[in-house]
Image 1 (cartoon, rainbow, N blue to C red):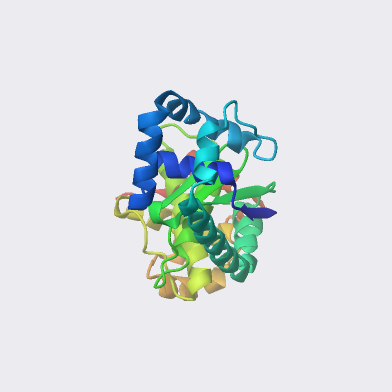
Image 2 (cartoon, one colour):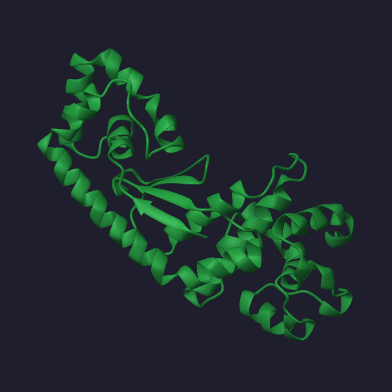
Amino acid sequence: MNTKFIVNDYILIWNLLFQASISENVLNLKQYLWDNYKKKYNETYNDKALILKDYKNFIPNDDTIYNIVLENKYYEKVKKQAEKYRLDVMKLWDKNKKETNNLIENVLRKDLEEYVFFVVNKETSIIEYAPKNRFIICKSIDRDKPYNILYEIMIHIFNSNIKGYTVKDIDFKRVVIELAVLNEYATKLTGKSYYLFGNPELLSLKRWLYPYWLMYLGIPKGEFKEYMARDKIYFDDTKYAYEKELKKMNIEEFIDFCIRNKRYIVREK
């Protein structure tokens, strides 16, 4: 997966104008623009989709608002902070690139195109996915759990690459994404099992899918007990036929397999 991490003036300004104010300076600037250029301010709201669609060639119909912000002394500080944050995110991404690529190639098992990450103000605490493989990242890197931001990005990527399911079967999609990102990816990144992390409402279904998830990952049946001990999820492996075809599927095909065979997989008493 090819990636670009950029600070784009238009996206950065849009977030300053329409997300929560990150400082008193920003609040005052927004109030000034609202008091003096209310119509132009409102019209600027619609620019976001256009910028994300073609950020390299975007030209505003009216650049009044953008020019005022660009000429504001405080904006220089905001942009420098965004540039520093961009380097921090890139450093974290590059450090974990091997595991991230492994997740995509060996768990998602689908070719991905280029992703563009617009890095803005981390204070607003948002990770937003947009069409055409665009992301807006504005969330602090947790010193105690620096990988959290990677989990959120990959959850968005997995969601966008897995087709929708009916309300009746949506939990299968949710559980498999948890298994892939919140569990498998997190375990590989941290070196300790994260398999019991996630939505508690999905834990029961996750336990039923877990044996088939190991088969999907290509774990030999002889190693099941080792993984059960690691992840604290136990099952009687003698009661499961090894489904060899699962390791040849991509993640969508695996979800479809689970849904088609749910009466067999979910062995309620």
